[in-house]
Image 1 (cartoon, helix red, strand yellow):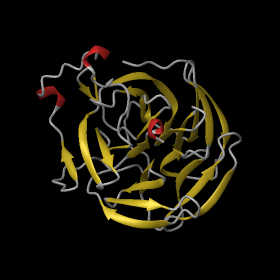
Image 2 (cartoon, rainbow, N blue to C red):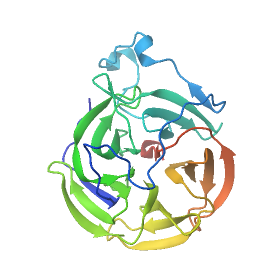
Image 3 (spheres, one colour):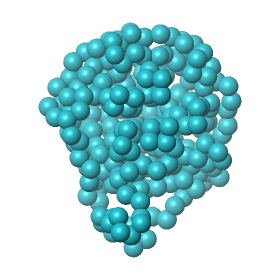
Image 4 (tube, rainbow, N blue to C red):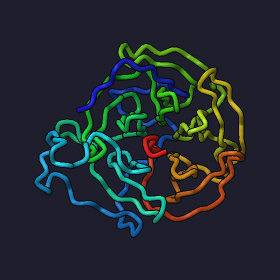
Length: 278
């Protein structure tokens, strides 16, 4: 399993959360619900395929299972999927498991510049194997977070409800940075322009906010046109949103407005772009 080196994380907006009670905060992402969704393909269970998940030798020509190969990944609280922007379909990869134990409440995922995936389950930070959804615990954060992303300089960012803070992953030391006036709807994504794009709660709908990761400066871009934008991803020049109303939307990153909407049945908690494929 891939391990972190020394890296600094930026965490945008985190709120207090009782880890032991495992209670969901007000306005939390919904619990998983099963569905027979025509837009979601279910892959064979890795545990039934005969694949032991062992180390992949380069001599076999097989891809490294710890490097992300899909342009976009999305997740429910317990399951990882790939998403194909060209077809609008999601394919199930696997259930998040740590040593065979299911990890639920995975609020978001992110991929670094080398293709390694991480995830956050409120306060718990994990490394994730993209090919299998196997996870490895990294550590516990002081605050509860519902969004995660990397920016173009390799900094990891997470989103929640209390502003922007920095975290050293070696010590998990956290320091406030900014953006405390917003309540996170559920995700933040770093785009190739170096800025962060954050879905926050507005009066009626969610609002897109652009964040400068260098100094925490925020700019409200506009009303997204819908609420419950819990997941954000990016591929082929398009900013995607995945909503609690079982929709996938394309968002204009300049104005924050939704420009197209399609159905994608599922309980979407998080999403990530793959900067390796930018």
